Length: 115
Length: 114
Figure 1 (cartoon, helix red, strand yellow):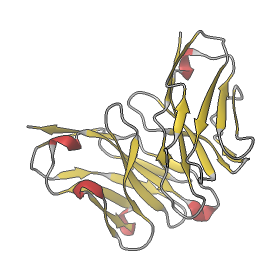
Figure 2 (cartoon, chains in turn cyan, orange):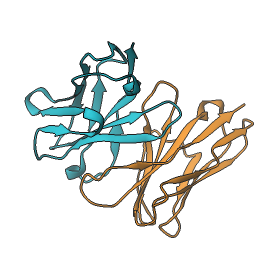
Figure 3 (cartoon, helix red, strand yellow):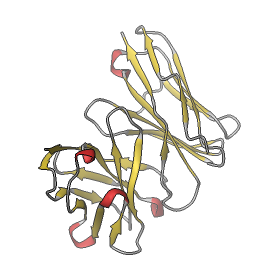
Figure 4 (cartoon, helix red, strand yellow):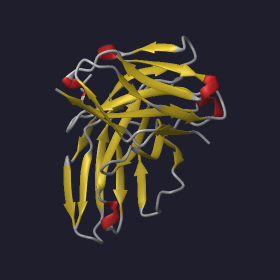
């Protein structure tokens, strides 16, 4: 069965420093992986998705993620944090070759950006 | 494209009452999902439809929960005999059937069971 594990429930960084949000996945097939962001009192928004093309995926707002099959990881990074990046981030796996079209969310990582 | 619309935004009910939520997906989207999110947790999959067919339902979902999408457009989620543990944000999302398409989410219905 497919699943994702977000290794940190909270991450704090200073403005202008790099961001690393960690995600490991479990999947029986070649998964599709996504990162979504949820700002306070706002809806969920897609940051980026991986679908077996390039292993380094670029998303919106300067975020990117690298798919590493050997490590079953899909960590989200950004070179320089901005105050507006403070939000909840969710790693998501979809195991569609298995015949299901469910999207399974991780428990989330709350990113705090310090001035 | 008016986005995914959910109604109501908030619902307060007493334990034991039935509640129904509505979701209107983006018009050309044929796949529709329901999720539940509690504070500090990620969205939990409940069920999804392709057109009017309900293709999968979470095994963890109580039989007090039922969802419909009668004409393959809007969907309703009903919770019968609500319990305090049902208090959560109920999210609807839609997408175009295909491989690995992104989900478009509504703003959700916040349910509080007293």
